[in-house]
Image (tube, rainbow, N blue to C red):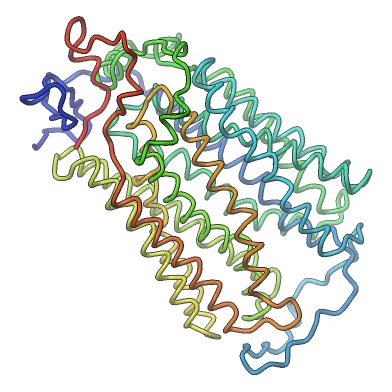
Length: 515
């Protein structure tokens, strides 16, 4: 079905043949004038959501750079004289001299500090999603970012006070950030029309990529300054930006289009006709048993776990590979580590726009679109990691493979990331909290398993190939499960018993275009 305008509203006006069929057919209705304002209110939501995720990821990853400057490491690195390694390049006079850090934490203590964030992060995923569904995502998301910012600012103070106090602050920071993703998911379910969701997911959630891209090099530069001791500036800067962002968020954003006092009425009408009336269904109890037996939800969960395993292999272990095997210096390492996130951010937006365009043209169903792009997001980075395993000591090949293949990981925004809303709009936040909590457990598991494979005294190319093979196999296997069991049909347990789809509002009660 071809439309005169890519953003023409597609409204469900009929269900072909059988109203009980899970297959719904889109029928074009009259074109609705979206807004007469110079900027759409949902665009402002996308911009602020993007900046929010950029902030929280900057506050999350800055420790990975700052901890290098925080540690007073005077012991020489263990030598590796095996043949299955790359030769170190000649020493350069351009490297920045290091200065002694303020702490004598052991490697085990450093590992505890870096992992402590995830202990809190996993705990608030499900509660954050449910609270956002009941009370609205604006306050939950905003306070989540604010708490993350406050505890980020307190991090240097806590580190100087006591090692254990620093861990507590990192856990509390994780607790605050843990609500952000499910809360935003609950908001997108109320604000964004179905045919725009892939694009908006790319805009908003890709803020995490750009936050990483910005934070890594800036944090590295701040650590070299004499002002304020250098490394504490990483926490003060990004924490302060988080507080400023919170003030703007509370003024500009509202839970639903109907509650926004400055939104154009035409935009409210367009959103309402696209996704249905914004009914309050918070009184519905959470169907936990139905969640456990819902195969499409398990498909999302397993797909995200596979992609997270590969992601955390790259995020936590690839810099070590680049340092110990390829012998990149710390400055080059930090800069090059940001490249995959930059390419993933750019490609994620472009792919999602293309995916929405295909949906608007009617050339692909929503279910097949999600399966296609989820496969792209899994297969290309996985095979790129296999390529890195066999590129050996070729630095240029490794960086090209990493940057180019990681770009296709951005296709996940058009894949499983928005699938929760299709299964159940009113429980989308809770379900995203469940799958995101499960996938972030890989933040603990992947480094632990890799630690069992890699020898701390004698790292070799063969050991690292096993690491990359494992990550690629898990990612590809998880994607196969998604291909078999994914669905875009709203589940029966998501629809309230008193919903009369045929009597009072047969058009508006249909929330999504389905395959």
